[in-house]
Length: 244
Image (cartoon, rainbow, N blue to C red):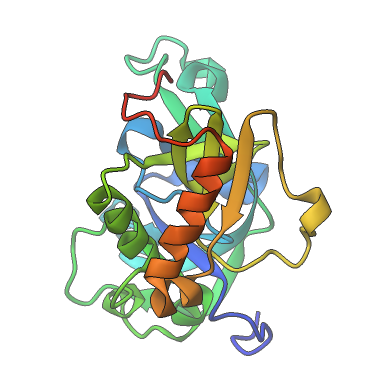
């Protein structure tokens, strides 16, 4: 795929995940899915694409310690490890929950992104444009993530944002509980394939989209929109642990 084919590459979000065994790479390539443990998931698991940093477990192969492959995300599900890997039903973490991310075809970067100095890489939230242009893994890191700005602003306003809730097999970046239901927040640009009428809805749920550029330009205005949406859901947030 040419790095210049997508005119909206700067808007497409990418989550770089760590691959430390060949089985996970095989499943991504041949079965079209990848798993992330819920307990160790990053604050924002949802993205347009998933990219893979292959650790030194692939030593002896040219892809070791590089980001070489990526794929479009299609669907998110929350499943136990036992459900994901029934042939490993006796595993000590068999009852732990994982995000199963269903993927499109695995694509190979024209120029794989090496890690010249970093030896320990965890999840990296970036953009497709950065992924396609990066010369080193360090180039993937965003100087300031609008999602993190909004998350911190909500906490500063005594709200308790919840991470990585799924709504109709789609990940919400932030969820807030209110007396009348839940408010889901998406911190990315509108998906051109999802119209206003077909955006995911469920009883006692509302979904608010706050694009990154809007968060950067007018954080206070975004907070006012969040407040107005919460008022429609019952007037105040319940600062209690989420039951799930």
